[in-house]
Image (cartoon, rainbow over all chains, first blue to last red; front, top):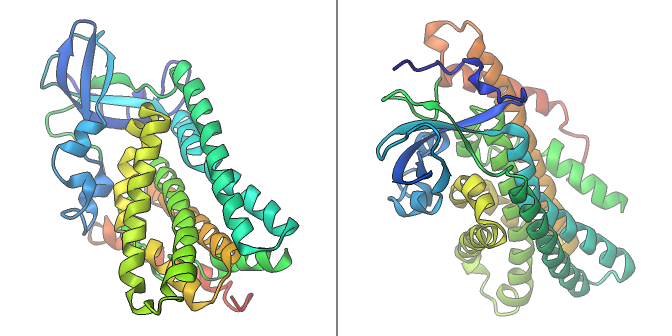
Length: 167
Length: 193
C-alpha cells in the first residue's frame, strides 16, 4: 500500500476546497458505517501542561469525540486513517458555536448600556443576549448538519507512524 | 462610546495580550502550526475570555468586595474559569454534538491559558465597570486570536522555506515571534490604557 505525502493534492476535495486533515483510528465497524476516534492533536502534545490537561487525560475525552463515517473503503477495526473536513466548514462551525452567541451578548449589552447606563441592567441584557445567541447557534448548527458540513470524510489510509503534525 | 472604542484598541493592539503582556505563550507556540487550528483556538478563547470577564466582574462586585474576601480573588477566578470552560464544553455539546466533535479539542486547552486568568485580574486592577470589563476581555481575546492567526500564517510560510538546520523548528519560531513583538512595540504610547 502506498501513502501519499502530506503535500499531496488530496488536500483538496473534488470541488477544489482546501481540507483540514486529521488522523483517526477505527474503533468499531458495523455494516455500512465505521466509528472513528480522533488522535490527540499536535497542540496538545507540544504543551507543557499536557499532563494536566483534560484533552490528554485518558480515553474518556477522546471517546466523547468519536464520529462515524460511511465505510466505502472496507475499513476494519484498528485501521488508522486520514480524514478531512473543508476548511470553510470548520470556520463556519467556529462562527456558529462561539461568534454568534458572543456577538448577540455584546450587542444586547451595548444597547442596554446606551439606553439605561446601569451595570445590573447591562448584565441582565448580556445574559438575555447570550441566551438568544445560543438559540440562533442551535438553529444554524442544525442547518449545517443537514447540509453535511460537519461530517468529516475519508481521505486515505494513514502511514503507521503518521500523526496529526507532519512538520 | 469613544472611550469604549479606545479601550478596545488599547487591549487588542497597543497592550496586546501575547506580544506586549507575554500571556498565553503556551497556546501561542503550541497551536500556531496551522492557521485553521489557530482560528479555532482563537474563537474558543474569545468566547471563554469574554464570559469569564463578565462573571469575574460580578463575583468581584457582589461577593468578594462586600464580604472583604479580596485575598481569595485568584483562587476564585481560577474556579470560575474552569467552570466556564466546562460549561462551554457542555453547551457546545448540547447545541450540536457534531459541533462538539469538530471543535471540542480546543476547549480543555483554554483552562491552562494564563491570559484567561490575567485579563480578569487586570479588570480588577483597572477598576473597570461591567461594560468595560466585558469589552476589555473581548478585545484582549480578539488581539490574542489575531496574533495566533498571523503567527500561524508566518509559520506555514517558514515551513516551506529553507531554514539553516540549527534554526529549524522552535528556534526560528521564537526569532519570528520576537520580530513580531518588536513590530507591535511600534504601537506603544498610542493609548494610556
